[in-house]
Length: 545
Image (cartoon, rainbow, N blue to C red):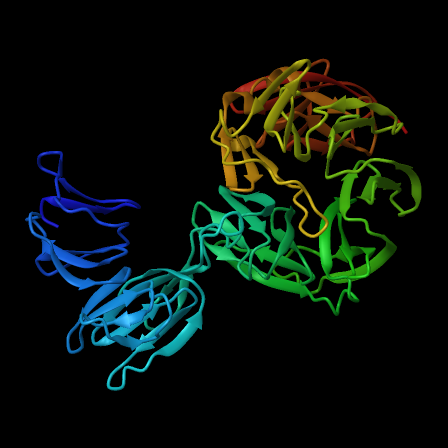
């Protein structure tokens, strides 16, 4: 107001004179102030003892308007006079209770001669002529003004920003700045937006940086398919497919618990041979593997669901090459393309990642490594740490998130980025059967950063080492490769271009991305990879079947 900035703190009220860059001495000691507002030419302050006022530019005299109870809010009604929100209902200046005796009145707001007020659990409206409290909805109101209110209670570690911002008087929900709960169970990048889902209420997914939310209930994972379909596994609510449009979801398919035969706790999914598989539980503990068959066009409503395999308590899926891996209850089973089990290993996996011929399993005791081809044990790193996220960087470093924070391991060099020495806000949660968190690390190579889901939200780690050295560490896998097989380029950055040449320099193939189908004649070739202003060349051998 004018030349003065008024600040309500947890222990004091501060007045700052802007033109002189000085704090004004108030000559009044408030007892744990809770309310500050300007009406007319005066500033009003409520604390645990009462309500006081002073001229907004003159602070030597403070008049006591109300005394004897904590004051959380106050408004001056055009006909009813002063209404004071206390810990024992709405009172007038004489101390008489007008409404809601025994309830804590957190907020009071006027819209004309209509009063809106919020308790610890509900939002009410009082309209003329009777002014009887009419409950509009239940919920903790964390902000209330003439035109808007914010719904949701900050109660760490379960909540983050609340359930949304609504308009008055029509109670239309317009947006929120985050998830209802902090436990993040899945993250995906969609263009330049990060979408994160968790174990919150109905709106359990949030989009960053826009702050928009959506959801269908408690979410165990969110994944992408073909960059056009988002897949959400719900905790007791089945499976949801969302066809992504330009600014909204063009089509939605929900596989309800009844369509899944009661297997409605959907824990994980994998894309195997261009087909989506997901694993779901029923309350008794049995799990079932389902297959989805659909074409991504302008609609996904003709998606076909098939159940293909029943097991006991499996909740992790991963696919690589011609292997589908299903883990749970301390072991991981390996299936061939026709879904015949051919091997298993004893490992209690929270998350799986592969790098070339190495399979990495994040466990409650570090990262265990196995040969992808022989399934032989290769060793363990980061022992003693609960690992919930894995990624192998472009320079060959192993990045892991978990109970230690964020770790980078390259050879014998280990660096831990804990909350004490990085912007990551907290420690990653350990997984649990009820609320698994196995996707706590997500790399964003386009912008050179890593997202880490923790018990206090999502940390953004930006460092040049995220993109460092890819041009020195790219590899072709497999190499040699059989004709007709898919060939992948490891440590390949996004938006890459592949140019394949004969040894004499003749270009025979060009592809966008980091893989290609080997339809080349048997022989020796050079693969030129171009990305992010750099170019590197790799030798490649194509062999006949």
